Length: 119
Image (cartoon, rainbow, N blue to C red; front, side):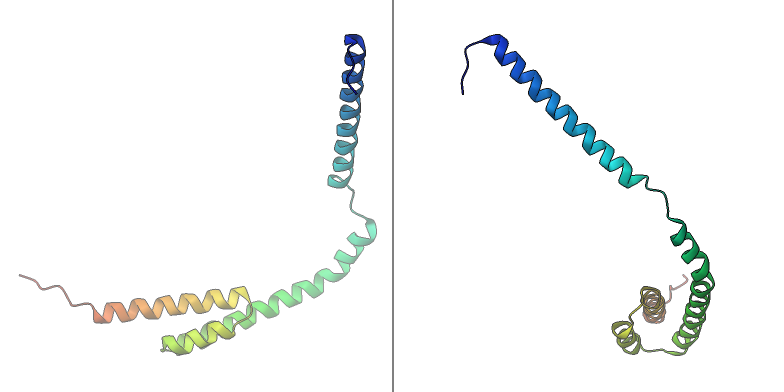
């Protein structure tokens, strides 16, 4: 409703500002509690227990990537590499295959480029 009393308008505005300030403080407290939540000790314990397993998985992945790298060295067809790329599921595998494709294409370009003539 519209009111003509200026003092009443001031009280209403200050009450609205106070409510907004309280709401902002509550939001900030909520964010701070979510952002700086301490890590639970059970999660730390799980991390310690699972570390050897994750270390073993990482070593297995590195061995698989090394084997894939050797396999890629033997392939001399861009089409074969493209098929492998489409079938690859892991990012690191695709990264190695794309590098092999770039290498083959660069070698093809070097082979097709005419040699500069010496005058």
